[in-house]
Every structure is written in C-alpha cells, then in structure tokens.
Length: 194
Image (cartoon, rainbow, N blue to C red):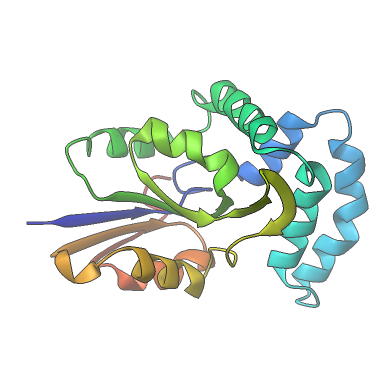
C-alpha cells in the first residue's frame, strides 16, 4: 500500500523559523540594523496592508540579492552544519528517520529552497518550496515561484505529485498556512511533534 508523507518545515520539523535564523547566522554584523529597518514593513503585513510574501521577499533580497549560486550554497551549507544538531524537534527527527524505507516523503515549505535543500537531503526527503530566482547564476532578489504557503502548498503538491496513486496521505503542519495541505490528507496531524 503506497503512502505519502508531507511535512511542513518551520515549526513542524524545526523548533524555529529558519528564514530569520539563517539570515541572522549568515549576516551577524548587519542583521539587527536591517531587521529594525524592516519592522514597519513587518507591521504592515500584520495589519494586512502589505502581503507577507512581498515583505519576506524584500527582507531576503536585502541580504542575498546579487549573490551567486555558489556564494549562497556556501552560506546554506555553513548554516546547515551549524544547526543540523539543534534545529530539529527530537520527535520529528526520530519519526522521519523511522520512515527511511518509505520513498514518498516531502518537505512542503514556504521557506526558500536555498537554505532548506541541505536539510531535506540530510533527512532523505524531497523538497517542494518557494524557489529563489537566479539569472546567470545570480540571485535576482525575486522568487521564481509564488510563496509556497496556504492554498499554494496544495497547488504545488497537486502539481508535482500524482495523489491518486496513494492510498494514505499523512500531512504534518503547525500553523494556518498548513491547513489546506492538512485537508488533502487522509491522516492530518497538527502540532504532532510538539
């Protein structure tokens, strides 16, 4: 019987939001100043005046726009090496490792592929995520795909996986951004690893 496993990343498998953590780790000298500058923009998203996707894209671009794929890969791998032993929820890590024999496991995340890839590889799972846009191997500061959250998670899953071939679909999430993905599942789990 074929089973499919869909895992949100930030807060579900991990104990923190990796976007802020990755940027703070990678740019310790100017992270705080940049964050303070962006507080008004983050507040606009809280009051639904600005789309969260736009604020997120601008914040990431502030640090990474103009960097090459190679430069970003080095940052991502350094972050992975630094965090891999402390970032995962213990129950989540154990659960995913117990699925080593299962072929169809995915992280489905709004986080950018650039820093989640090493973690997905480490866990032996495939990755569906928001993707960074590169032109001539240089990050433009834009996203190549819509932010992989809310209904977009479902659109991406349906677009990349033939759901009809699975008898059971297990989905794991921890926020409202995961609720549509959880509705896809025969076995939805909310805050399962906390």
